[in-house]
Image (cartoon, rainbow, N blue to C red; front, side, top):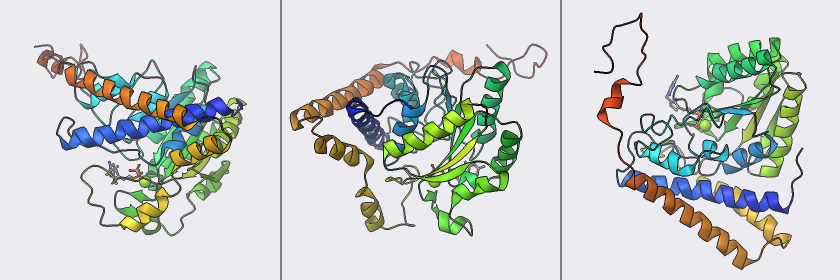
Length: 332
Ligand SMILES: Cc1ncc(C[n+]2csc(CCOP(=O)(O)OP(=O)(O)O)c2C)c(N)n1
Ligand SMILES: [Mg+2]
C-alpha cells in the first residue's frame, strides 16, 4: 500500500473538510431553492471515501455508487465547480445540467454515477469489472452501496456471478445505520451485513468507517486481491450520516442525542487530532487550510450561479436516438 504519511493526513484533512463544506453549501443553496429535486448529503461518511481513494490507483480504477454521490467524483478528480453547476442544473455541469443531484458522472475520471435505483449500481459495478477483466486492464472497480441496498436481490445475483468469474471488484457497503427512516435493526434479523459475503465464500469483514487509515488498509487488501485475479471482496464499512436521508427528511426515527453521540467520533475531528498530536501542523497552518477550503467552496458557488442554464434545444439531443427506432422526432 502507498505509505500513510504526514502529507496523507494533511491531504485527508483538507479534502474531507472541503467535501463537508461543499455539502453544507449545497444544503444552504437548496433551502434558497437554487438547487431543486432530491438532495442526499454525505456529511459524516467522509472517511469512507478518503480511505478508499488512498488505496485506489487513480490512473485506472473505477468507482460507482448510489445517489449520495456529490463528493466521490471530486475525489476522483472531477472539477468541483462542474459538480456544483450540475446541481444547479447549469450548462457547465458534469452532464450539462441535465442529470442533477443523483446523476453525477464522468467517464473521463472513471466515475460511473450516480444511481437512483437502490441496488441498481451493484450489477453495473460487476459489469465494469467484467469489462476490465475481459480487456486485461488490471483495473479494479470500487462499487459502493448502502445498508438498504444489500437487501435487494440484485446484490445476491451479482455476488454469485462476481465470485464465479472472480471479477476484479470491491463491494463496499456504507452502513450508515439507516435506509431512509428504516434502521438496519428493523430491516433484517441480523445486523452483521458483512456476513452476507459468507454465503458466496467471498472474503468479507466489518470495517470502522470513521478512521480513514483503517478504511485505507482494508480497502488496499481488497483491491490487491482483486488485482491478483483472486476476485471480489465485500466490506461492510460502519459509518453514520449526520443529516437526514434527503433534505426533506424530518428524522422522526432517531433522536438528536443519538446524532450528537455519533458526532463525537467525527472523522474530520479525528484526523485533525492526529495532526495536532503529531505536531504536523500549527493552528495557524490549519487556519490557512480552512480558509482555502472556504474560498474554493465560494468559487464553486460563484461559478454555478454565474453559469447559464442549458439551451432548450438540447432537451431532445440526449434522449435515446437510433436511426431504425424512430418513435420520437428528435432534434426538432
Ligand atoms: C428499488 C428502489 N426501491 C426503493 C427506493 C426508494 N429509496 C430511495 S433511497 C432508499 C434507502 C436506501 O438506503 P441505503 O441503501 O442504506 O442508502 P443511504 O441512503 O443510507 O446512503 C430507498 C428505499 C429506490 N430508490 N429504489
Ligand atoms: Mg443507509
